[in-house]
Length: 107
Image (cartoon, rainbow, N blue to C red; front, side):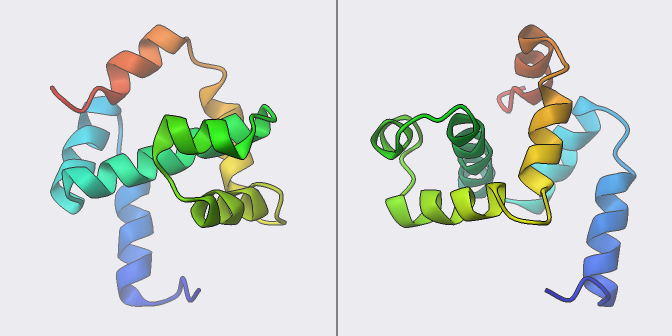
């Protein structure tokens, strides 16, 4: 992945410019379709479930993701970049009610 293209740098800068949950929801909804948002949310949920040693079948049932996608998430979850683990650790420090309020896509 080449992060040094103008477009990729702009995307990263845009994400870093987000100041709160409302801005995040607004940006994500403009950037992606509802289906894409759901897909990414399900991938993060799969990473969370994998980090708690939940079995693939339960993750498939819970998220609707394919076993191939879950296997790829498991590979990245345990990989050297650590992006999933970094974010899972950060969001685990927030209260569950705050997360639900902050990520409610219907508002």
